[in-house]
Length: 122
Image 1 (cartoon, rainbow, N blue to C red):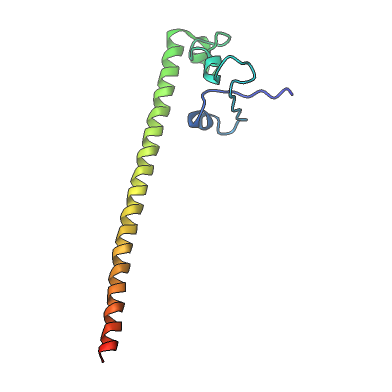
Image 2: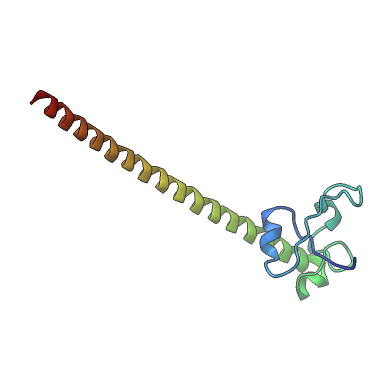
């Protein structure tokens, strides 16, 4: 098969980096040399040197390519942090909502118990 896929990073960041391209999840078992990240080499070194493509600056390699790769990594880490913070906030809001709903329902239960007791007393 002549399908060629890029393995930028393993995990979520790799999937986010390739939204419209074919995604390949490489466990490293085909080469026997370890995980896919070991096969990438040093990001930003340049094409043919283990750094891969990713734009004119990164293809040229050198200090600017390494800087570009570092900036990209930092960007994705920050995006992940933002997503996790938003998810955490959402879950906290859900918990708060459910606690309020529990309190409301417990008051309803008490109200119905009072009505039943009042009917029994009559």
